[in-house]
Image 1 (cartoon, rainbow, N blue to C red):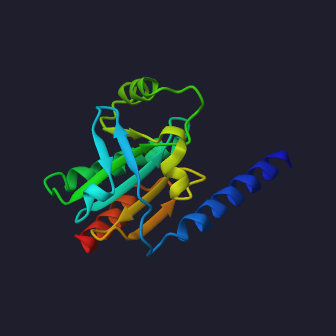
Image 2 (tube, one colour):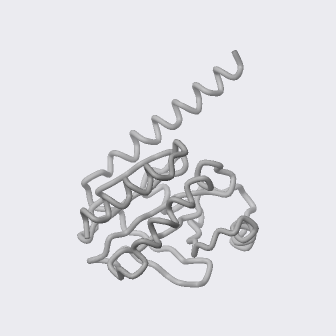
Length: 170
């Protein structure tokens, strides 16, 4: 009974997170700024005319980590396209986890991504992200065109979904 209760809470949280996120679909993305681990700044305002893919994740989120190979594969397929930007946004992290802790976590798993730290979860709040992982695609005009919460474990499906969405918006 206890497992059913916990499962119900998780499903309810996931569904609530998905419903919250969908409120932004086909609307202007909230303005935001991020700083990457390597010190690179990013501003939505500076990226007009580009397709932006946000991947909200945390070190404690197993589905987030399992989705990384698919995300990295999609990013590599658009590597030479300067009009497509991938942002791996470390958010909703365990209190006390520093950017160095997060970097070490990724290094130990052989994940070579330039992540952005969502300090105080400002960006996740702006996008109504309450559960992880969340993928968001913003078109060249700054409109949110795709939002997806969770990861069922099918890398090929995620690759196909994101690739099709990016191709449609390029």
